[in-house]
Image (cartoon, rainbow, N blue to C red; front, side):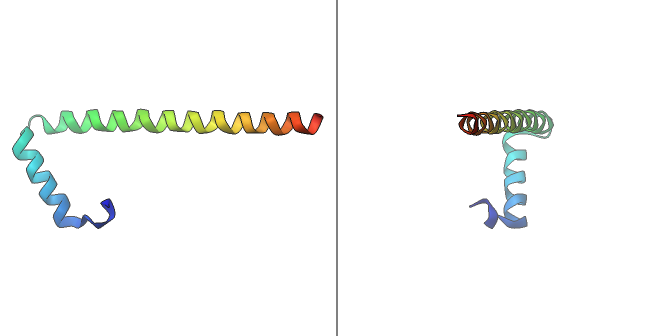
Length: 65
């Protein structure tokens, strides 16, 4: 869905955001969105790493038995 936006769509979204929030609030919103996205990615990586560790432990336990 987001693959079909293109440059004109992005410009339209930016103009609407400027109208709604104003130029003074837009950097704050971008910073908050970036930090939220960073935290989400970090949590996702941790979950995947924990899942991989559990899988390795199960395989190790199966080989011992």
